[in-house]
Image (cartoon, rainbow, N blue to C red):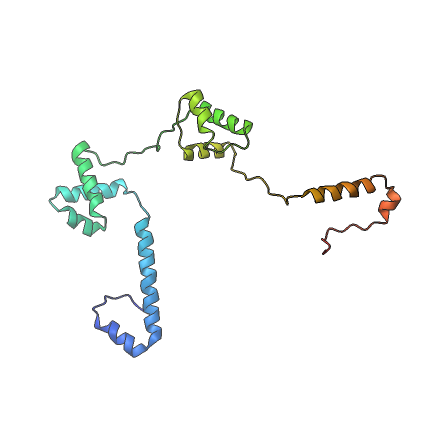
Length: 200
């Protein structure tokens, strides 16, 4: 097994020469896996629990620097700085829970938007902003309009594009239907229908 070591370690260079290419590949793949997992860990943002917040403030009160605390607890120094600033401003380090950005539209305006979309089926989300703003005076972003319509199970649809029929096609179909309009069931019984397309 390859073990992840520092690049200045002599055993790594000896391992490259002594064990050939296989050990090098294992080392490189393990290093890449470590880098990927480290990158994923850094991308996920986790909130600090109250106990850890108390530990940070306690260490800072004892006279430790923010950099020392960040290295000890493996937390970014900017997080510790914001937490210390919050403690100095409010005297409190508990997390403020928020419900997110407040909604721009009311439920009545959402219903109005959905009804307008149902009346004008071919209108886009951009077209729906004019009737809403003229009726209520509220301007809503395109993303909010789309989200409101999706909440009412209204999604964007494209009309189906059929094969364009020429005048010749229409004339031939009409002629065929007129020729076969007066056929009896006995005559139709002799015709074999198939779902497969016959090559022309």
